[in-house]
Amino acid sequence: MTRDWSALPSANSLWEATAAPARDFPVLSGDQQADVVIIGAGYTGLSAAHHIARSGLVPIVLEANRPGWGASGRNGGVITAKFRLSFREIDAVHGRAMARRMYEIAHESTDMVEELVSEFDIASANLTRTGQVKAAHNETTLRAAIDEADWMTREMGSAEVRILDKNAVRDETGSDIFVGGVLNPGSGGIHPLNYLRGLADGVARRGVSVFQESPVMRLRREKDGIVAETPQGAVRARQAIIATNSYSDLTGATAHLQRTLVPFRSAMVATAQLPRNLAGRLMPTGRTYTETKRMMRWFRMVDNRVIFGGRGAFGKQDSQAAFDALRKAMVGIFPDLAEVPLEYKWSGLVAMTLDSVPHIGRLDDRTLVSLGYNGAGVAMSSLMGRYLAAFVRGESPDVGLLDVSRMKTIPLYPLREPAVRMVAGWYQFLDAIGR
Image (cartoon, rainbow, N blue to C red; front, side):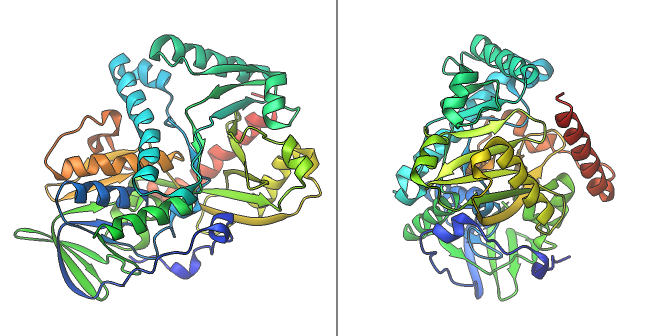
């Protein structure tokens, strides 16, 4: 099976409009040899290539389109040390030791982004570590957020978490609709496409071969390794890494992994540049922000523009209804934006998993995978490249709940679309009645 690329949305994103020029990579032609062939030139694949090359091995990266075309160039640029599954939930189900290990991995992931930006001197990534505020829309969700923060402080030693009252959140956001919130200073923001292009350029300058417009149509085993076949060439390697995430169904070579994922469209809009006085009132600290609603919205200020995002409709196409809903929600939080035009709107696919955490490890003796970032992938996918390199070297890193042996196939997979819509509708109802 090969996806019909003409059906995919064309990005009209702020990131594409403001990104540094993209390096032009060759198309694979003929046969190549490598220690590891990496399928996908997103954060996962490029970080893996960097760490594998630093180990003294030879990686080759194959990208079906251009680096940054997929989720790594379409996301909101929010960096958080978390999973969709909370640490408290992990503790309740899997025990304190597992919760602490997952906490360590989450914080290692945000540090990895900073390390890679520094390693490759990606100034255009505009990395910030000013923190993220979870803004509560009612007293019930505020109490839950405070309770969670108190638990994190008490049980995980997360002393940096701070509780904010209504006035503090109003000063943070410029909005009066929130009743309070919680500040996590370790989070941050980034220009995601510049970060991606900086990684691609950086690994290429250090001798790693990256090929664009070279989709892997088939993976086949040979006696001494594995072969990745593209329309115009092939790479023979001892091991292969699949780093395609929500775009795993681009070709039949990786499509089987799509049955472990529920792709969910994440939509974003960006306003025109705001007048200086208005921009100074909204989000003046430069942090990133999320709501406590189940159908969570997030927002941040970039270059005097408000970027506002959230989960959109399931499917392969951009949804005007989703963009309209985002604008309505944005104006509900920031009434001063009612007359400000939108200049950009775009979307990308988030890879949800059945257990709400990513998965990494060996599928067999020659194939490794990392996918399923559940909407928090900028930092986590960057870190997974380091762990993939460790697996390639024959090590067995402790990845906690992320171990691929825990990965589950989505039951009744053909029904996933109506199921997602039903759940999303239920969440919207609960948000509307303040539950």
